[in-house]
Structures are given as structure tokens and as C-alpha cells.
Image 1 (cartoon, rainbow, N blue to C red):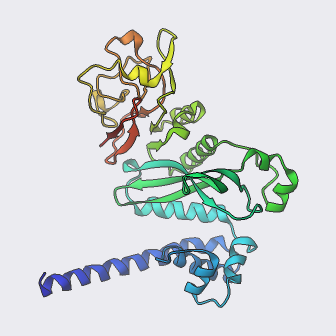
Image 2 (image 1 turned 90 degrees about the horizontal axis):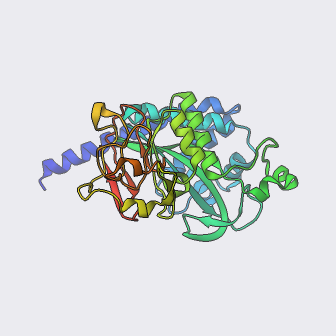
Image 3 (image 1 turned 90 degrees about the vertical axis):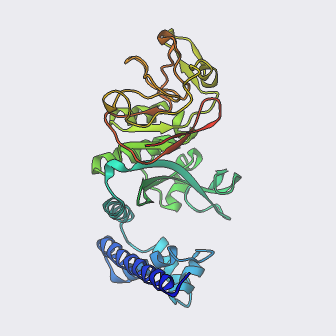
Length: 338
């Protein structure tokens, strides 16, 4: 590597750093109206700066040290007692992300939950439950997230805390944790459906959504996506039951065995006749209009085509340059690329 190469690399790095600082300053400006007082607004700036730093642990103590505070009291107050509009802050971040990461039509909404382990029992929604971050059942909380994924990058634009049923039915515990009285128990797919509905109403929902088996097996979520015209590529487990046109119900992995030998590749979203129609898990042609889509591939005999709405369905002419990985009914990973 020559001296000129090193100088060019340094100049490029400096330019990217300057752009990052400018974007961060703009985001801070977008968040300013969410705070009624200047003190929590300033502390929030320190908090966000710490979150995007390379600190190995990002608790209040570490973030306070990074910000130059002598104790974590200010950080803890920001998160526990300070008055600011969390919903407005999330909308501001979402609008910033959508505006900076490219055309909405070229993005995909990724639905997934993530957990965080907790030591105590007073955090809202905490209980022993499966946590993806730990890969096991542990004491902690789960949050359903919606990430905006585009060619230029990806970022979380919406989130909903999963409140377990025993929390939702315990009025005293809810009051102590500050959970609103009108918040009812909702499953994770129901929270995802609520997120999609809100994003659609705000004009920030991409034309495609994707998620794992937790969301793919939920009929109500799939119905919400279809009713709102959002295409989806959702995983389903091998044991998922699909309904044939004859009315017979069978496992998805059994239905996958009926696919024609040449159907070895997954289709691209929005490809095919007039860039619309229904795609299948393993190639064209699409099924008859009465059928929808399944991870089980099409049968060469139309009357026995699976009619489950389980994995991949475009919402009209859609272009998506991203790829959505999904698991075929036989358990093999496949790719839908655009």
C-alpha cells in the first residue's frame, strides 16, 4: 500500500466520521421536541452517544462514565422518572431512518423479538421465559421489534414490550411498574400486527415484511398483512398444517414432497407474469387464483395445491432488491433474492 493510498483512506474515513457526526446532530435535533425540559434533553444526548459507542457494557454506570458524569444518577433518572414522550421519540427515530436509508419501496420490514436478562423481578414484563439473546429460558424481558432493512443499512423503527399474561392480570404489579390500565395481554404476533398497522397508518411500512416461525404460524398476523396489502416472507415449522383444495390437512413438510423435480429455486418477490400473482416456495408457475402460498412447493396437480398462506406472498407489483432468507417446509434454508 502506497502513501497516496493511506492518505486517500484517511481522507475517506474522516469524511465518513464527519457525516456520522452531522447525522447524529440532526437526529438529536429531531428528538429535542420530545422533552419538555432542557436537562433531560441534554442527558438524552449523552445517553444516545453512549449507546452508539464501542463500550463493551452499556449499563447506566458505563454510560455515565462515558458521558463524564460522576454517578449514574442522571442516567437512571432519565430512564426511570424524567418526563419525556417515548412514543414521539420512537416516531422521530423511525422518520429519520426511513428518510435516510433509501426508498421505502426498496425496503423490508423485519419482525422479531429480542430479550434482555434481568436479575430482579420488578422490571415491567420480567419473568422466566425463553430469551433469544441467551438461547435458553431465563429471567428477563422480551420486546417485539420492527427493523427497517434497506440497501443503505438497517435500524429499529418500532418496538412493543411483551407483557406476559400473569403480569397483565395482576393489577397491583402493573400499577407498581407503571403499566397503563388499558393495556391488555397480547401475544408477540399480535404486537407485531399492531406495529404493522401503526406503520401503515403513518406511511412508514415497507411493501414487504419477514419474520420467523413465531410470526409465520399466526393466521391473524398473516391476515392483517394481506388486508393491508403488505407482501410477506414468513417462516413456518415443518409440523405446520396446510389445507389442500380437497379440504384435507397435512404437514407442510409432507406437502413439500409433492413439488415437481425442476422446482429447485425460490422465486423472486414480484417476478412472474406482469410482476405480480402468487409465488410459491420453490419456483413457478404460480398456483390457481384460489390458492395462496406455502413453504410447501406447488403440486404438479392443481387440485391438490396447498392453500396455506404461510410463507411468501407478494402484494401486487413489488420490487425488492433485498433477500429474505426463509426455511423450506423440509427444514432447508432457501433464499428469495431480488
